[in-house]
Length: 411
Ligand SMILES: Cc1cc2nc3c(=O)[nH]c(=O)nc-3n(C[C@H](O)[C@H](O)[C@H](O)COP(=O)(O)OP(=O)(O)OC[C@H]3O[C@@H](n4cnc5c(N)ncnc54)[C@H](O)[C@@H]3O)c2cc1C
Image (tube, rainbow, N blue to C red; front, side, top):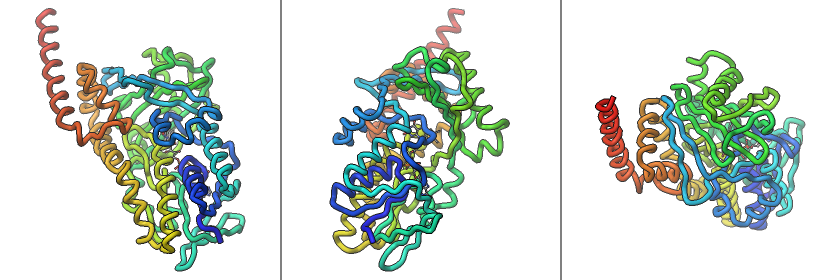
């Protein structure tokens, strides 16, 4: 029997492993794949990840080809644009095949036993232990199981934590990671995000990396099934063709690099722990509901899950009550941010007119634009700035109307 079995070796599982090993806890990490493995992803992560995980910064700088971006070009459904920037770099762009292998190496080096090609098919929780079973019959017994097995989490379902209503908020996200000689951007320091892409509730993005462009579109699965025509790849190429016509990208899509995958956009599950079970990363829907950012939250919640497990093991109480400190921890750090992201998403995605007004207002008020970027990056709390945002938004509306009147008077 080991103290903890972690299911999944992505950013959430790797951070859980690193944290457990550093605390002297015996952990086994199981992943169905052999690393390095790819994960469909845009590969953009907030630059402040270095500040949050200072002891990983040097390792990541050495093992992963990182590209820094300091501007975001945001586009509204009607084509209004605003260029957001802050005082320093905003995002790191990287390839998931490299990031995930580097983090897992770190977990291994810290002392975690990593078992690759172990596809977990069942998790059974009893009064004295949990048993994790792989599809080939191998079994591991543990006091605690950390579910870091992504959006289709087996652990979440086995523990009764998966909420069927979360299905309504699943998005289908497309991506392709294509080298510059086929797909490029005019400005490698700027990422592009089109909100309410084509007037539909969704988004399109183009991220420049060190040697690749990563681009894609995202829509709620429910909207995709009820309203959209065409395969995900057709929607993806249409977006890229339009981005090329607008000068946002140069070149064209390479189908061989294309993938589509699910992304949970409904905010964290109602419960993220149960008897002997903790969920982190996509397994518990820790994704920003309007930026689609999930790597950072996976790392943060992987660490908190491990710390909660360490405390519960030390007290000898791995029941749901003994693990409840987990929810307190993650809520204190990212709870507000993720709750706000759901509110913003509901307003922007369901109302293209609102996305339009927000982006037009930001283009007229640099401070508002900066605030929006800082909220998206978790650097500013929407609650602390909502009144300032509201009056700046209203004031920008007045300025826009005055401009339109002057322009009409002149013509
Ligand atoms: C198209 C797309 C673009 C995205 N772009 C961005 C972006 O630019 N920036 C960003 O921050 N986020 C982005 N995301 C979200 C991000 O990819 C996820 O939030 C992040 O990968 C979550 O990390 P994780 O460790 O929780 O899960 P994952 O990275 O999915 O890792 C889960 C691991 O569990 C393993 N596993 C699954 N099931 C089992 C099983 N039964 N047994 C054993 N192992 C199992 C898998 O092999 C995998 O290694 C994007 C997502 C998509 C789909």
